Image (cartoon, rainbow, N blue to C red; front, side, top):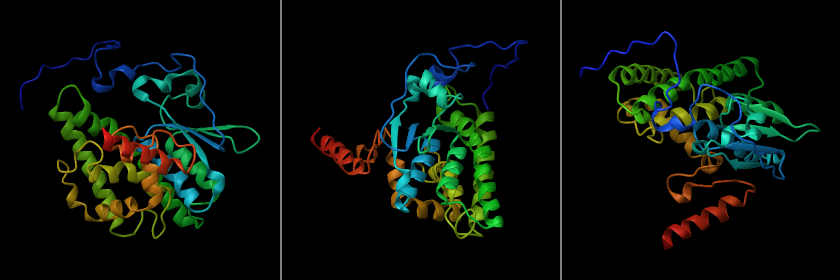
Length: 293
């Protein structure tokens, strides 16, 4: 290990805007809006303001799964929130999510709009509203919710911990990468052991637990996020790989992963979703534009 300067924390921490690496322009130690801007509102019962990060994908997958299961009341508008531009700090967005993180949902299906923020809360809200992807049996429901909340508590170690220091930090720090790689591999082992016992996380049934965990941990072992599958020896987690591939084959998952996506193959992107036909028309337009470029 190369020698590095020893850092001694100051008595009182102060904000150094030069720090923060790739996302320095959107990191700040205070909450609240930075500018006034109302959010757009479409015609559907659910208005989603998001981006296709793993947390955003959870909700678009859930909505697409609900529609695929015949719940027409789950129709939604998905508005692109570009976090690199600070869209999440607008007055309209902060009114929906005071934490200024995507995804944020406005449920306009009732007499009064209801705001829902935090991806796990959104999944639970939708599951309870439509009576879908949440087991009714007490023991299986408890198992499902345990894995849902496991994901909410565990993923920050993968994202803000491993992902940040491995992929985004301005410098590579051996201690930080080793520390969070160790924890990430422990979490992968937790999942692999569970998925050696059952087809899905809650048991035999596909639930919001799988919808919550797949974008993060399925994406990680398949090399979709952080390009770290080889580094983490993802091939060792055979049960987890089986599960990741199985869920990726679901048509609703494939559609949900496209929504609010602005990177990668143009055919995999659907910047905004306002109608089911958008998947066909807008995606085809992108394919044709890419072919003629």
